[in-house]
Image 1 (cartoon, rainbow, N blue to C red):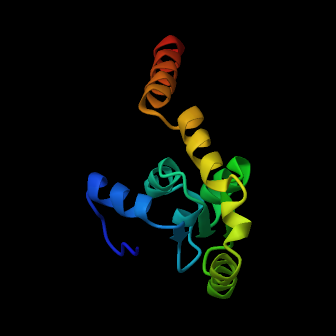
Image 2 (image 1 turned 45 degrees about the vertical axis):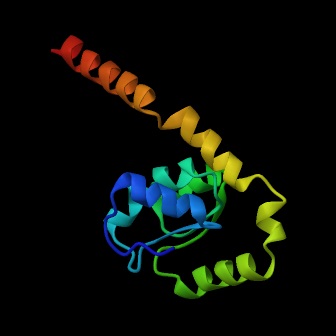
Length: 130
């Protein structure tokens, strides 16, 4: 499954759930590449391993969650190597819990309730600071 442009959430989710893994990449390293794309969170909800060519927060989350493997943004050879390994040795990915780790990390860190609680705390702190 390859999505080169924005897809509506129900359609994208069903596509990613049908796939064997998710791929997240930036072709060129930029400051934007140090952020975490929202699509990474959707990939995590599907419970599939994630292969990424990305820097910054996204790479940190993938490593912290132990839900896949990453190379630096723009490292197309490294990403190709990860994908080759995935194809040639799927047991490295199916016998482990990378996908389940992704789903659990999402549930513990990125739900709407967690986001709204954090936002409310930040807003309350701003009000108290004035």
